[in-house]
Image (tube, rainbow, N blue to C red; front, side, top):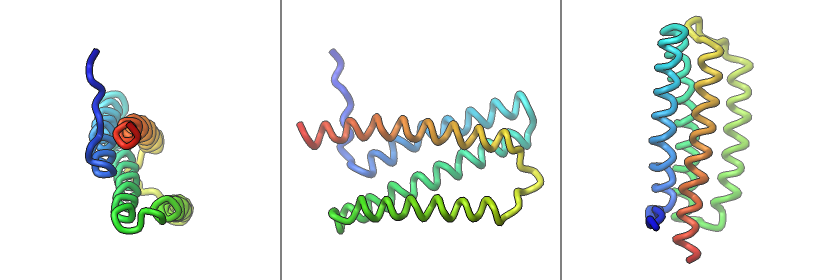
Amino acid sequence: MAKKPVNRRGWWGILLHASWPTLIGAGLTAVIFLMVESAAAGLSALVAGVIVWILSAITILLIALIWARYRDLAIPIAMGAFVAKIVILGLLLTVVPPPAWLHTNGAAIGALVSIVVWQAAEVLVFIHTRRLIYK
């Protein structure tokens, strides 16, 4: 039986192992939209996927930095940052008009793919991180 991979880098390992599948997923979605729809759709999918990756990576970076200094505050601060991020994003989406080149379907699906891939990868690597801590 093959040995299961274990994340020995903590939060930085979670960031690394959630980032590469997300960026690959965003790139593949962009290429598919480029071939099927248009260049604007491909660019929109890529930009939306990269924005999701950046926001998710900022969350993990914040948790990693707080975890190193104030471990007992890491979860409450991360939750507060998540709520603030969602509120700010909601305000920006309602106040800032979309650029003319934005293809809404491409952007929506690009963001959705990146969210799903990030969450799946993050959960899988987190499971392996916890196994290291508790076994």
